[in-house]
Amino acid sequence: MCEPAHSIVQYDPTDSDDHFGGMDMGSILSKLGSFSKKVGRWFHISKMGAGHSLATQFGRQQLLYLPEGNKYEGFWWNKGDFHFDGWGDKPDVETTQAAEEYHKRSCIGSIQLFRRFLEESMKQSERPNKYAARFVEHILLSKAKDMFVTKVNRLLPGRLKWGHNVVIAEGTKERFIKLVMGFTRKRGLLVPEWSQDDTFWKV
Image (cartoon, rainbow, N blue to C red; front, side, top):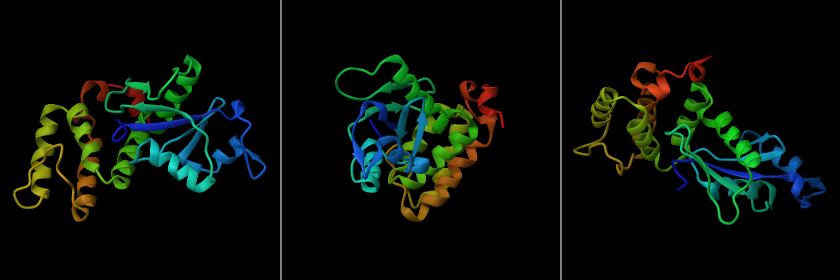
């Protein structure tokens, strides 16, 4: 599926003898900074506003080489919807749990992480409407959806109306993202799964 899911690529440095410049894979992957995070013995890479291919492309450009990794997707609009997204044998439970923990630490573990993920993804993506559509459809209450549609239709030019496939022009993108993010700051506008999760809202 890739966008707008949270696309994750996972590597296990202890299972590989591959080296680059005399450094082991763990040392190399750690140089990806905010794009990587180690959970247990596994390293994980994702790129906000991009799918698996662009996340690993970033790594390959920086490192010149990356082996094949496990691919996962987190459907953040449904908190518990996380799964392996690859061919062949599914990784074991411990391996998958590490990837899911990375998903939580990078995306849905708190309101701060979620806001950062959503905002940065929309900024980096060529299709910010895809992220906004999932947020509006699955996370906002009905009354909030109506408020959003009214506001976004005022923002769109001419007779263009909000819908899944509406292309957000570059000149409108910044204001569109600001509008979407405004709804993330109002707990009472979100469905119970999100609004009643005190751990999620804990500062």
